[in-house]
Length: 358
Image 1 (cartoon, rainbow, N blue to C red):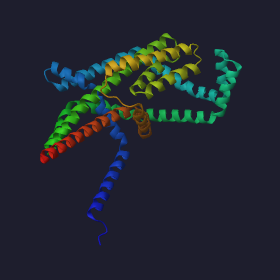
Image 2: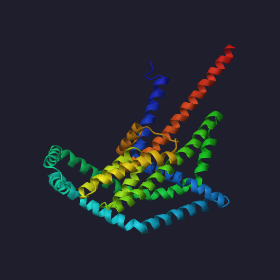
Image 3: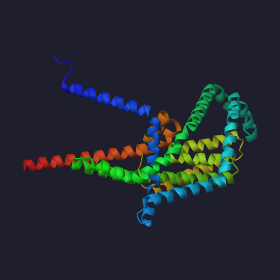
Image 4: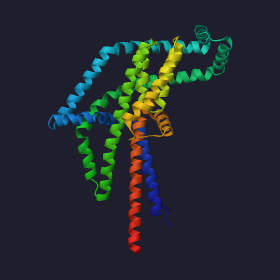
């Protein structure tokens, strides 16, 4: 009697290969994320590179060089204008955070804020009771947040490789994709893969460019308005809140809460008007700007976004959070392509059966 039959052996082999693949992904997650970021960065620059390639009579390396030069000049100008203030205010905010955490933990800051904003004695007592009951949880959450943020920032050195790797994807990405398509022998499968890759190139590239546009617009508007309203640390809070706009649903909410929390702890006197601005800006982004720019190319359900953000944060920290949405968008494209192929195959089988009966 055989210990394993053929089907059992194939199932065990498949499970072993799958387990080894998961082990490889877990071990090499940093390198994989670096390449994914490089691919998405190449998607971001693909449109201007393609347009310049036409103007430069087909010279793609020259077009890539011009786009990178323009990007470097733009970043240099932005840094010259506000870079020093962003760095200084960011450092001050990081230095101030432990003091705020200590005062919040002791409950002294509640008394100071209540006296400054004219809270009633009952309101101050309610806030003090709440923080007293949840002091341990709040302290632990704050420490974990700071620890994960610092650890993620310290391990971001590999992001310097992203623009370098993106050059290779911009230069040879189309050829690599075509070689992969041509390596498939089955004509129908080759056609399906070519269609999927074409949709991914269009939709994911459009999605990333739109999200970057929305985030850049948010950085400029939020920073400018916070500066006009004289909100403390406006040049640190504005870029942070604007960058979080890249993450749909979750990012804007977190960014708004960070702005309000820092303004409250810093003793800002016009919190009500700051809240009104954030709500108005959210409405403009969600119902005016985003629909006009994004359209309905890629619509992700809020629950899907929330799952992706949480899963990305568990796998790769802050970087995983930002990377989760493009990955989900890519998976959505693959899923819809598979459903379309399955529906087409079912129709063909039904049509063949009908012809056979007739």
